[in-house]
Image 1 (tube, rainbow, N blue to C red):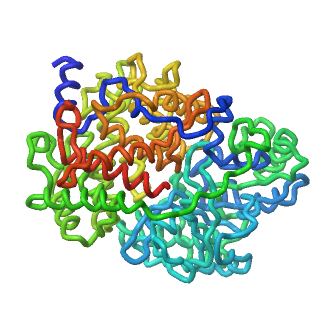
Image 2 (image 1 turned 135 degrees about the horizontal axis):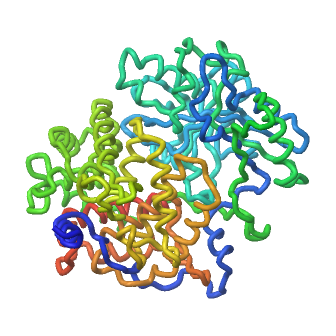
Image 3 (image 1 turned 180 degrees about the horizontal axis):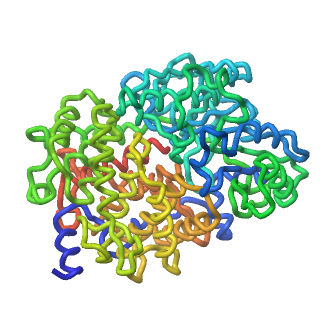
Length: 628
């Protein structure tokens, strides 16, 4: 079977609504003033520009996980304290990270950032006033008090309109509860697009205790041990079991490993002036010989030029309002349609679903969960039970199962998530030279070169969701994905459907930008990725007014994902024109919802499935109206 025939046949039969076609998003009116802006100004107008005097220091990639019981040097609290005493440094904050589910009542969410630090974190991030409540103190850090601050996104996800102050947040599988004592102020996304409001900040002693507890319980209950992971597989740093209790009571500062040290410089000190003395200090701290390479990385954030002060001032926070009545009603009707379409616990009744068994059900479940249907709802329970009895084969199906099981957050599914992550990683494709080139529909012959950016997009989403749910994803996965997207970006800033192909596609460019943002989240941020993302966003901004009728719902799903990652529903063209795709496409969906609550494009060869189209529409509406 030829490559073209194989791709075209599978395209007709399943979810691939953006494959192989160049297109642009729906035609709309420009949403801002007609004044033209320069490219850099237009890009930065929708992101919060970090202060240029901030630095991040992290362990060098080659050193990650190299600490051992003999006290091999890594970044430590002693390093952070020494840096804070340097002339020219205003503050330095140690950071210990973790990643797991957060629960409150029947709501659950995986924060992008679970950080353990000291009160200096707020000073380093230029936070002088909280939105509500109070910050934790140095005494809280020393005592290991289980308290935390939460960002606006996490408040919305777990508490809705209710005040979180005094409430408890539980971390999955460990009975580990933190009392919310403060709410962080709103911050726009950083240049890499990550939602700075999706954060839980606690004393570093508490997050270290969380990680130690997960590791110490590994021998007793492997399922629980995997509920909490650090993003860089730093479990190797804890080869000897740590004693129970607050970390500060049993570990000397010299031996406490850190994931990051955040440094804020005094206004009069330039980045160039700060880098050399900090490098000299850390080399001395780590007893490095003259010919030994640095075992740390110092970088500015973001690694791009800052805008003039008048454009670098953060914009006022948009009010957090509920979705409009019409949108809530549309979501409710779409949910009702999917409920009624469920048969025998699943949504696999049509021809395409039979050929890709187990693929449509997780997509519908994901749409229902994101629309607010609780985990104990009968439709959710029956759908999850159905998935637990299936063995996926195709990339889309494996990926969607990982996505919905991770979103559901049930401890019993962690083994299945890990198994699917391993199956997905093993199914990746390589070209004739042995170079990683993404995923195809199924596992391919060695060095076949068969892959496409749509299957790869779903694989990236799944690996990220799996990692955030506690599954082990090889670090090389993120390195290879980032390299793939960097080397296959076209001269116009876009990405094609096939990695080796020429000619950029709108949806595949969304996939490329999201792939870089996602992989970069698991690695050290770098300037080359920032530049590639910027070029991709310009391509999307220039093309956002085109026709997407042939694959509208797949495109909307992709746009919704981009909006979530960037916490912004706006794209800007190279001339500075702004397009609020959240508002414009939400209006289109409201106007084209059917009487039975569904959405579909019966004349489209790609959006022919009403269940799939409705699921994609709900995923977009929930993303758009959580981001307003």
